[in-house]
Image 1 (cartoon, rainbow, N blue to C red):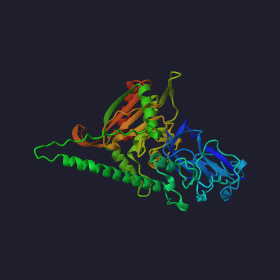
Image 2: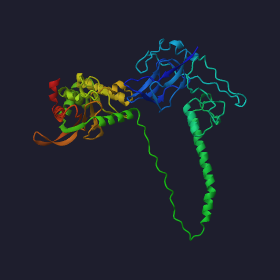
Image 3: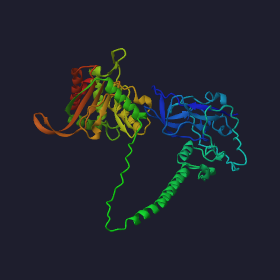
Image 4: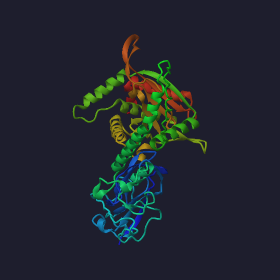
Length: 482
């Protein structure tokens, strides 16, 4: 006997309250295994795949791609214990989680059972004329409970112009598209399996309807044009061409949600709460670049990954924060206290196709330059593929922002709330510089520090930035802290 279980959008952690559906990984009628990912969602922190804790047949999905759902809202329903799902899950309906389902909802957790090959249960097409009798209700396989709200099923009934009868369409998106364009689904022949009407079929009907409408409009306008052309026959009458006014352009509206919305909220809060100030200095990075080249040359062709400039600067930051711990802190506005944090969790700004994200290198103060560089490379790759977890994007105590990759020299960055400071690094490029009393061409970089003026005064911020610049100009200064 089968039972329909409702899977709700789980709490994805980090205080997230909603998520946007990016892509459904299953469709109604598919057979899913326990802990198989069923939908890809985007939260304010990251893009994640959500696995279903039940094994069985998907009977309904709630929410279209691009829509937002609050945590706890129904996501889909699964018929557990159905005959066609027996090969996927041998559990009884009453113990769906205890007999193989982990109950976990984040990728990387759960039973680790391999996902079953997707199978879909095709509805039997009812070809009897609608006028003869009302269609019989489809025989569900011993479903003992059902969701309280109307759920999309394999065959839509009575949704086209009040006509009572089956329509071979599965997707609610296809039905909505047809309604918006006044397409009668009864007149379409589906190109899918068993005559299933697909979106491509509706799109084709829309294009055909638009072509017919345009042809009819041109035909209706032809007599008017001919009548107007015969009205002006005297060569003495001339009329200047009157240009029809162009239709006003429609402004594009882009929703501020997901990662973009979270960034906007955080930046706005930073500007409204933090009295920030910025100081900057130019530094001669020639010796730093030479030290990096020597380090990478010493490692040999197979001596490990190369050390990046960003990794060296990150190591410089951890050393500077050890000397100026005021900048590794946050402000508790409710208690009116400055909270100095014991460890450095170093965030670094990364630009991706989905926007700006700030992955966090945990316990950066315990790592050397090579270890920091390896972690930065790993997190950067995850950011580019959209696979960073919420935990990897939160909990930072200080941020390093290398905006030099955009070809700019300076910036006044906005502090990553609730942190107290951010170090910005411009591009490193050859410039004229006075070196040992003589004019020379050196590798110069501009460093800027934006800091929360509540946690320290300009003297502390200036001391921090000067120490960073000294380490850039003379990397041997770091030997004292190694």
